[in-house]
Length: 94
Image (cartoon, rainbow, N blue to C red; front, side, top):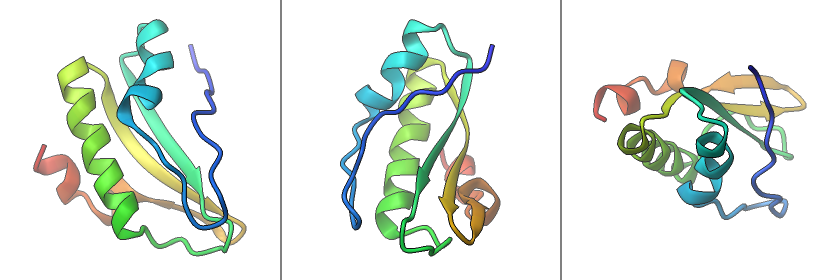
């Protein structure tokens, strides 16, 4: 089964996300794996320092909870980028 869950609506420059909100729906649905995505309204496909820190937290939390984070996608008007593709070390270190 594939589903979509909106976790947070941020401002133009930031969004506060905590792993408990990200994993809540996944755990209730007995999810085995998930792909996380967020948008960059300004159009940059580059992951920020905060994006990388959040991704690292989510990967580690997922391991503890038994839910694999497959990727974290950044969506913009200019296309998408995969944090896993650009920063695979985050998955190797966890």
